[in-house]
Length: 446
Ligand SMILES: Cc1cc2nc3c(=O)[nH]c(=O)nc-3n(C[C@H](O)[C@H](O)[C@H](O)COP(=O)(O)O)c2cc1C
Image (cartoon, rainbow, N blue to C red; front, side, top):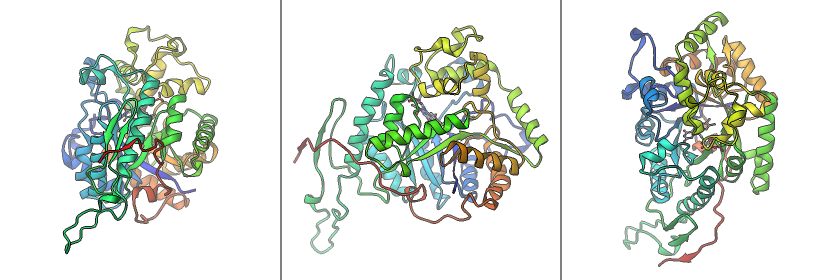
């Protein structure tokens, strides 16, 4: 087994663990909004031979509680940050989150194709459909389209984007300096796409990039979300609370992938985690309590409300989650996570765990040897290919601790690379081909 690792951040003060921006002043080398902070993280992840630096993102947030405590907010644009970070790294991959609900497909395809050139084949796209009303309001809408319809639209969106990414044949750009011919018009697909939701014409105005199609990632785990993942994703991020639930998720996804005519062995599954590693178990435990104690419950409730697209503060916090069944239009897969593991916590209990890092599972915690063993056990019993690691404390130091303590331990056990092999992000994640579009050419538009 060779484990894949990604660093999970948002271009914001605290990516998942609420209050993780709080840190002793004398230890802060950069503030989160300074470019040095991000460059230091990128360099550290590359030193640790991580597969990629992953940026989650959203447009919403910013209710009163969220503003007061910086609950995944304020969040700047990762598509602007990543090209800068790619210039200070050579091998590290990057993934940016971009929403099918708000970017016009042509704009997204052009931006990502350009980023694949700029990063020299190291860009991935985390495909999201957006999750809450706050995001809709930023764009002048009252609400998002309903949950399943967002995925229906996204299916068509992906179809169109893939068509755009493939609109130049490999040798279409002739650039003949003698004849002055730049491109062979017969090798460029000037298609017209007319779907139920989207219309566009080819070709893309960017020549094929090293990967041609950005590496495709996705994180929805509802029934409809899994179907979408099985059709389009090359890596899926997921969160489960036990190894039987992890194994069931992997089996289910493999079945759906096969049903879509794709090879399930090429699909990667990475689990959300927020391990706390320290030289001794006592130090790791102490750090965990410090982190948990400083998180205001109302901030965790606000974060969960945003993810579920349901104002949990309006309920008695001792309400069981099962009572909310049928009211969640945000991340249904996350809401069902407890249920899938046979648990029915109250809002208060769920929010405490959710706000304190990872996406619900108790943190991996202890010495490098303990954490490495547990990570290996999770993958061997639960399946999947690695972890998406998100910091519960000051990110530059968190990743430094992982690189200094955990990575050598994983390498000693032979489950983690000792150098980069080169190639594109897709090559590193296990190769294979990106999915193909499925709609027939509607009409040539010449
Ligand atoms: C680990 C993880 C990371 C996610 N990151 C983002 C994100 O950055 N932006 C976003 O809008 N949604 C994000 N989501 C939400 C999903 O992309 C998806 O839209 C949501 O889970 C709804 O899908 P579902 O109901 O099928 O689970 C994330 C979900 C998970 C589990």
